Image 1 (cartoon, helix red, strand yellow):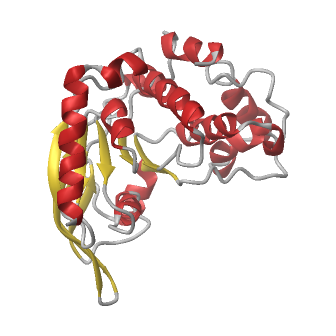
Image 2 (cartoon, rainbow, N blue to C red; image 1 turned 60 degrees about the vertical axis):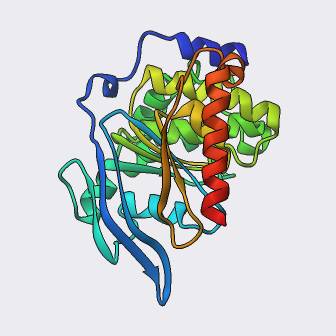
Length: 272
C-alpha cells in the first residue's frame, strides 16, 4: 500500500463528522419498477448509524437503483426509505452523498478543484473551498498533486480524489456504487485497504455496492446478498473481521474464507 495511504489509515486527527451522531438507513417493504419491469421486490434492510452495509448480487438485479432510492434520486413504488427520520427525497438527498462507479472528474479542473466541487456547489468561495479540501490531500496520499489535471493522475489517485470530493460534502450517509470496479487487481486491493483506513478514521453510514464478495466482506460490517431481478435478499452475513489493518491477512483467515464461501453459495442460489 502507498506510504501516504498508510499515513491516512493511522491518522488520529479526523474531520468533525467523526464526532457527529450519525444517521442510520431504514428500508421497509421496498418495491420498485421501471414500467412493467419489476426490479426490487419487498426488500427490508437497515444500516445503523456509522454502520457499513455491502450489497452484492448479479448484474442488473437493481443494486444501483437501490442506491439511487437511498440517495433520494428516485422514489419507491411501494414501501419506504428513511435516512434517520427523513422520508422525502429532498431530505434524503440532503443527507446522502452518492459516488457513482465512474470517478466523473471534470477534465478541465485541477485535482484540488475537483475535490472541492461539492463545497463550491454549497456556495463556499473558491479559495476557502481549496483550503478545506487541500487539508486532506496529504492524508489521502495526494500531496503534491493538487494542481494536476485528472489525465495526469493514476486510476487509484483519481478514485481517491473522487472519494475526497464525496467526503467533504459533509453528509452523514455515503452511497458508493462499485468505486473500484475499473481498477486493476493490485490497485484495487490497495484501495480497499486505504478505504478501510479512511472509514475507520472518519466514520459515516455507508451502503457499498460491489460485485466483489471479498471486497464486501472486508470493507463492510454486514453483507446482503441479492437475488437476480427482481431483487430480494437471499442471505445477510456478518463480516468476520471488517476493515482489519492488514487486508491480505484478513482475507486469507480461515473464518473469512468460510464466510466468503457462504456468500458465494448464496449468490449462486440467488441466480438459479
